[in-house]
Image (spheres, rainbow, N blue to C red):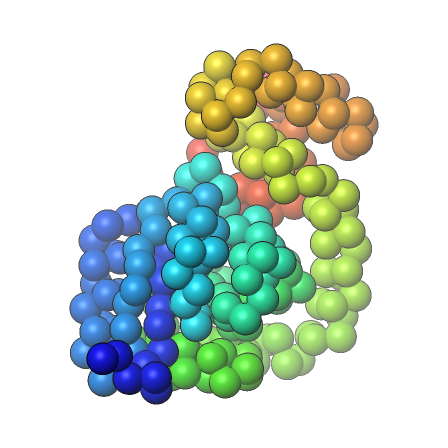
Length: 228
């Protein structure tokens, strides 16, 4: 019978080698259990709903549904599950966004490995945990960041979850037919979502939607996209 003291963890990371490394690291901890592994954001949301882990360790840059939107959906649908971001990027904009969306902590992948288990324990208790370099900046700029983030969050959350999903796939260069197949909807429905996005955002071409997705953090600025 599983000990009630174990902290259950879901790993959401699209790179298998990284995911396997994280799993081995956490399995060495006597008080933790990895109960699931997700390779994209949508799978992370669905597995969290099903497994109800204590903590989700979430990458930001993932296919189908990015870590930002996945974090938002998890916090809304499974509020008792904490989300800990583990990303290669330490940009303040990403830290601010996920904090506002309900993430309890943010670690950069360059952080020493022992911080991960410490972070998981802290966020399960209801505390926050950031990589040392981020914590220093976050503390110094906290009020300013929250003000700036408030405006950014309002801009992004004017879109529905499905619209964010469609926007991410558009920005990643997928055609309407591909998006329809990915989301299990008709091409006509994808076209309607695209039209709604353009009207809501007052943007009238795919290049503009892609730029908006980058600026809003729906896809990372490091993602290679073609804007014509």
